[in-house]
Length: 125
Image 1 (cartoon, rainbow, N blue to C red):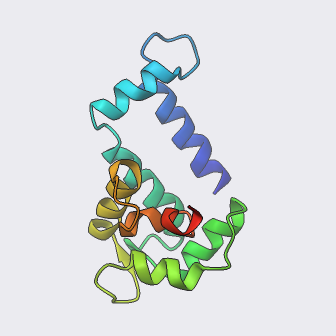
Image 2: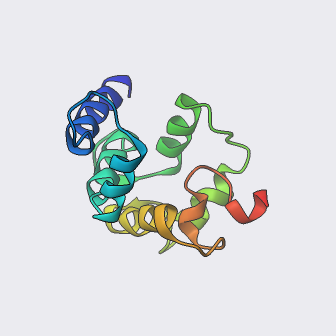
């Protein structure tokens, strides 16, 4: 996971650092999100989470991701059930793309994508 994040960080730096100063500034980040270049991000996250590289995320892979980044796993079963949009015990690339879009852009606190980091934003409020 560590090396995946290093590669992701380098790719992100190249993509977003528009002025080439070695830093991602808020204005550059917002411009990137405005252009909706974030769809490449969802693929980077899938590669990071999908440990066996079969194109889908299962609960044990999501749990490992949470543990590696010290995300509370208390509600992982509920989070996974919410993120698994078609309830087939895995999160496909298509489902994850929809989830990630909701996570970044949805103003609906009840949207399934708001469970991406383990608990609904609605529950936190």
